[in-house]
Length: 461
Ligand code: NAP
Image (cartoon, rainbow, N blue to C red; front, top):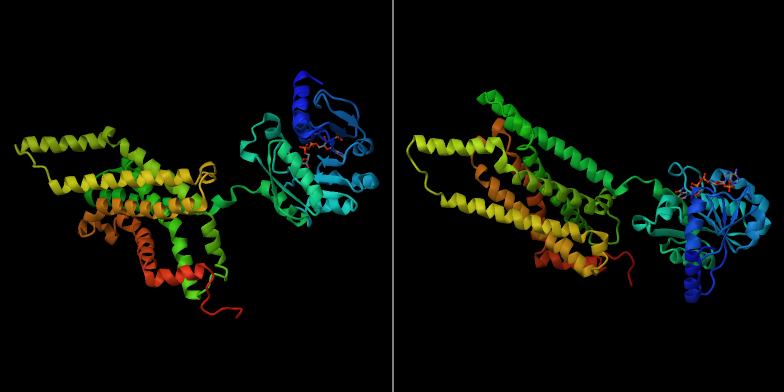
């Protein structure tokens, strides 16, 4: 044993006495990575393999024996073999009787088999205590030590003691075990690594759809309309001007979409007079992806800030400014400062800056490392109260900016409202409903319902 590992052994044996030997079946990628990590953490490791020849890849301090010999040396056997090769384990059923057998396998497709791999293993080895664990950790992460994103290890099994033994190993490896209950949970745990950003699908599709719609809306009103009726080519608006209209509109609409399901849920609860009936599925799903919607909204808001900041260096903006100066010089007339305009411009900028600041704060508090450090009340205060304040500030920012267009007939090209007016529909709806909901005559019954009161109780006392 080299000096480092003997130091580790000494340290671990001081703190938690001697670690129990662990047996790993299979010397493949995962078996080797897990064995290596276990030896680092002070566990004696013995491999059960089809070949007992020691290769360079196998951790130096591990023993390699036949499956039967290796299994006899440990109380815990980790099966680092693909499910399709499990059949040979039936020949070891007697040796594995009463032992803790850990299934770490994954599949290639969701619900690939009728039963989970762990349940299948339990059927093959009826006398063993099967526990599911480690399948959400990759061999690469174990080996490279980059476990930050995958520190959580889901564990499930029918035998409490066996599960506890596995959870102790998980902890000793510096990972976080999450008890998921009985072996029935194994199918879900096996499906977990196969999911591709499940919570992001709806937010991404919705954002993409809305962004495309708003882009073409702006293109029609600001480029095509001007080309047809004023014979001016503003096609270069596609690069910055139109994205800088789409981004703030998207940020505002998506932020409102984050708070819309909350007010809809309140209306449903008030109408039903109970909180004990499930919301419709679409509303449940919508509520679950509010964080993702909010983060996409923040990304659009940040892009809007960047697009706005480059304004002064744009050739079109510099040309328009110089045209204004030249026209004043030619007419020998200095335009006086328009105080109302100055107020409007400064107010909309100030509202935008404050709104963006709170938007960033909301984004930061949604990060797990931050949200784990605040209690439930603090989290609700930021996400709900500050969230609504952000929505109010951003809505006011848009209103002050685009407000002057509401009564201007020129704003209605092809009888269509300007994009800023369009963007206010959802936020204003949410704010109006929320305003009604905070009235004491509405808020009181709603609070009672949320505390368990029912208008027509299902079970009378
Ligand atoms: P692998 O590299 O293909 O290794 C599997 C090992 O199984 C082989 O090295 C071999 O070990 C043994 N084996 C192969 N055919 C066998 C047979 N017919 N009978 C008995 N043993 C046989 O696979 P892996 O990547 O290590 O994955 C092992 C398990 O861990 C899989 O169930 C996988 O889903 C799971 N897993 C892997 C990862 C990962 O990142 N790789 C992550 C999570 C979970 P011997 O030559 O020593 O017998």
